[in-house]
Image (spheres, rainbow, N blue to C red):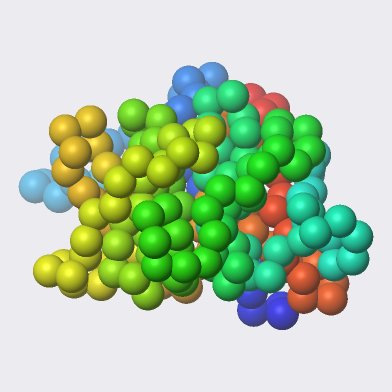
Length: 218
């Protein structure tokens, strides 16, 4: 439990840090210097840091998932989360082989897919993505297929992986090219409109989807 929370904390910190550097205009400037001394590049940093310790803070503002209650809000094995432009939240349950959809306030909307081997049915999906064409792509590692759906849940097509190596978290660009990565054990993350979505476990080990607001102080 503690090791998983540690991994989540590290991933959360790294993602926030990358967004801080790449997606926000810096208001502070580096005051160090770079100079050549007898053919050696010397970099000098100021003693004081560029940003204060409270440069940003993370505040939880949504939690989806419960151990007891309505089945619409229960997960057996929440494996991946993706967020659409309208902030609808799509949660892939690998064990149940379906995708649950929630609105931006965490209210249940519908369930996409079910366990099976027919068109639009899943066996053991491992990851979920929303493409630049606003299509849902679920990586079904057991069936060796990529399943594509509309954001409303209509099945579009399936792409076979039988001639491909095993991979995780596939992405599809505008030209229809596939990109993927080898899994390292970290839980999938999604960033949408300045908010971070992640899959965690509660105190009893039950999977929940959390949303965090990042408050910038710079």
